[in-house]
Length: 68
Image (cartoon, rainbow, N blue to C red; front, top):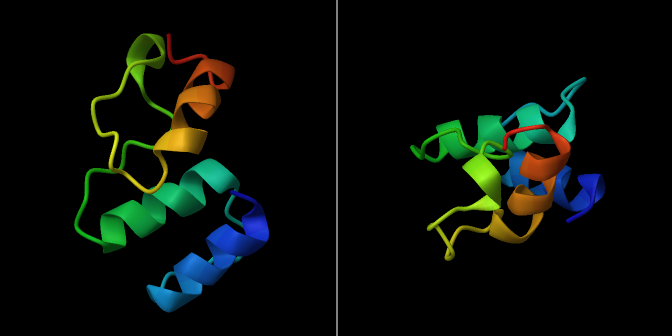
């Protein structure tokens, strides 16, 4: 998902997107929704939350972020 799409979701959820990178913005959205702020923290590229809106982007971000 690109940043424009993520910012739109943030706006719909009342999350201020200013100056947040992708990881922190998604985590802010997750927190606002009452979910665990786990984006890009999947250990060894494994996550059982396959229904999560962010799952598709999370695994590659986790590997890139060094969470393995």
